[in-house]
Length: 337
Image 1 (cartoon, one colour):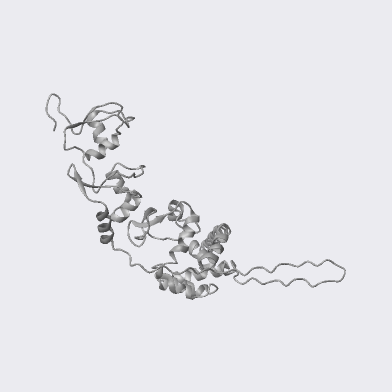
Image 2 (cartoon, one colour):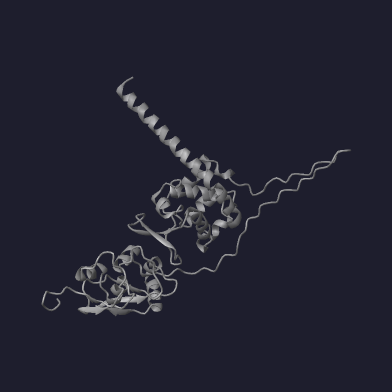
């Protein structure tokens, strides 16, 4: 065998192995989520074949970064009415905001609710058996920017026979005829599966980023401390939804407030820009039970800066007694600077 043909054979074998591996992963994913897709078809009127094809394509059968880290199996981005977790990911542009879920099942349910939005109303004019029509209409309605999105969905459905996942019109079995001198067994007819089409909620024009921020600030009056603007958290606020409404990255907002790994509580200060390394006062007196983070927020000074000025042990979280705490570096035998 010539060297040229040897490489051709190796390439073909590699491609075949890769295809077999992909098929195995796809089949395993379908087996795991087919009952959920069929259930969502019955509850929301979305073809199970389309649900499964979108999940396979958008999540790479559960192996994509969004699916693994955000449990997002349908590539759904944040919208103005989303107040759940968020995950930033480079897609059409850098650092786009995607919805983050507790688990994949929640992603499947939210996908169904997402398609019940007014934008996709015309999809439900198409029969659930017409997966080609649904695929094309989803693309027309702007679900994805990929010009080949519809054809990719159709190919997945046909390759894996996803159109056979659910049958909306099961055959009703007739009862057996009576036979003389023998007991008669009558079987109940199987019920016909009904697709629920709930009334479409009235269309609401989504707010722009500026309108979203203005609405937030209207409900959260701005104040200042140490020359930094801040607002006070209200009931139901989280760092995720506050960051979304302010159109900033959640991690940046958390870092500005020393809040990595911390949940936002009602009454907490939320600084709208980075705190400082020095305070407006030279020092303050703490009160019993006050935490270092609370003091940091009240004075607009980073926690680590306060630790450094006062040589506090890293384990110190709460002050047990009244204590003098410096907010800026103090020269030995001299004034603060």
